[in-house]
Image (cartoon, rainbow, N blue to C red; front, side, top):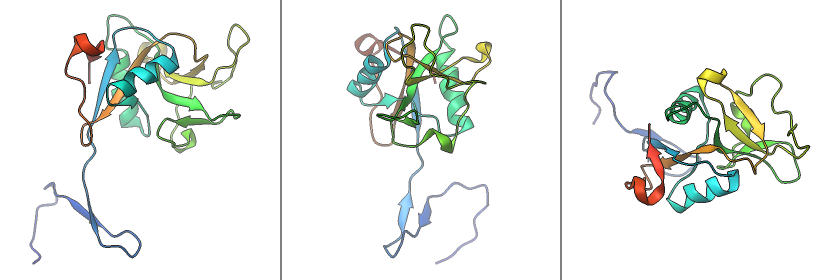
Length: 171
């Protein structure tokens, strides 16, 4: 039975996919945690995954603002690792969830430039806080930065113990 509802009311939506039955799309709820210590990109990702999440991905300006708020919310302004890395044998950046960075990007002018000061490759991505002008930078994966973990609260449980995880909840 159909009924009138205010346009401002929140309700689940029904989408038809191919010839299958309609499905109900649930809203996505993301929670971001800032690390309490610096780590290499690989160690940062391992920490996020060991606590039920992954490094934060940025697919739109709203995502980016929340990640940047987490990154710049500690005692000082920091570059923070996010889930951005070049694909194997390529200079094409991809998010850890498999999405190509071309769908939404905010590289700083001249980035990514793959110009590490030691001559090595810059294959991992970090966000810069607003005080540094914002945007993204590529860096050598071995450099230690703070990092932002992302948890999908619809399907996983975000950490509850700061002492156990060494993560600081910010946004």
